[in-house]
Image (tube, rainbow, N blue to C red):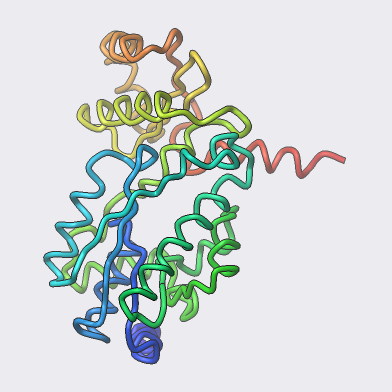
Length: 269
């Protein structure tokens, strides 16, 4: 609760804000806190595009409306960035740099003092090039500043009655494509449809990693046996999407598993 008090104080000091709003747990909780601290002097802006999981924009708008906040959707335009579509390990930096430029222009045009995002304290321990872009652009991350962790944010979001308190993370769909393999709209479409089908079958969380003609499925380790029972249906569905091979990762679901190759490379002499 001390951290929550510090968060409210920090937000009040900003006077008016544009919230980079994805509709996930962190940015929704931040938006709620901004409303408590600043009332109507808050604008929620969501970036739309093929790299976002389908339906996220509508969910974000619904949440913003429930909080009584003005909501705006912009086009992310990340597929227009060669630095992004080439898919280097720094991919997120270029996407975020482009996004923050757009958000700062909107904030300036609307007379809002600051752009803030939902980066939390735990994010600093993960590989997140987007954080560097935020710092360079002068974006403020109040949750991280007051030391709020993911677990604490979920707990506070639940206490605040926010319906997304237990929502699984839904990162950019490009994170399912191995580094240095080009990002295309068609690949993103295949991933989005494949993961939506898995969720309909009850596999939440899940990931479908796109390895060219191979789809690598990740589900919770406790659900591996259940996936094999639906193997025939899954193979047919994914083949119809354009995959030739369908595999199941026996390690199970790991958020950011494609970053494992970076860790291996870092250990090499």
